[in-house]
Image (cartoon, rainbow, N blue to C red; front, side, top):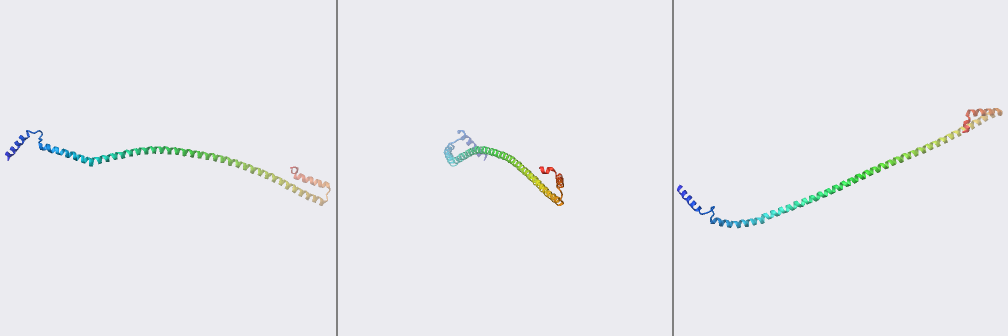
Length: 187
């Protein structure tokens, strides 16, 4: 058997000497047939797989681009809204400060008005009290005068009853006047 192997090996060496890279005609024909088949297969796969994949990638790229643009627009709008709300908050704060300062000013005015009215009321009460005191003084003086008249008439009755002469009457009246005092009659 080793001999058979040796013969086969020699034949193979003799046939290989004439060819470069072991290319024979059958291999070239097979390669020529396979090339258009591979190109056709590539074209079909390109149409069926690559184009949809490219289309999917293109759509995804466009979607991402529009989302980026939308995000940028939304960010700009958010910045504008933030600025607007910040401005409005500042305006509201200014209005609140103005309202508070106005309320303080009005409260101070009301306080001054109330104090002024209270002072005026105190003045009126004092004036009314002084008037009442003066009236009470006059009434008391009138009452004293009436009592003096009553006392004088009682004295006169006593004088008449005792049949006293005019010198005694004058003396009694002078004594009574001294007891009551001259200041009572003068005021």
